[in-house]
Image (cartoon, rainbow, N blue to C red; front, side, top):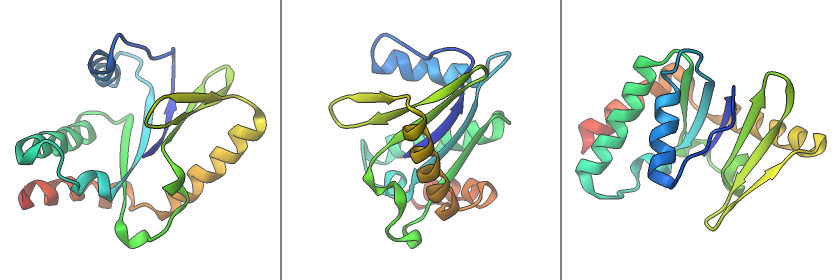
Length: 150
């Protein structure tokens, strides 16, 4: 997955679950950040946790798209073939008065990159992945179709 977030303040939390829950609530805040996420189709079809867990995750994606004008999710379909995002997950964090930062994720930890060269390189990478993804409109129907298939 790769994404882009326009942040008003740093996002942190105690533990993964608390952090995830806190991030979900931030989308509905009074002055919410903008979130633009691109999710590989493999993440939406790989069975993790059984059909009920998968259904819950997909329904959450549908709900986020419906409830929050500041959150956009795009699906990167299998039909895109090999794409620029295969190297790994990253998030571009943009701040109103800062140049931004890139958070690169791995299985063990994460790394923050702040140099102008890193930001430019990951912006280009994001642009390529974004160009390969389904439109926001077409992506909205994808989770609904997957829920029906479960």
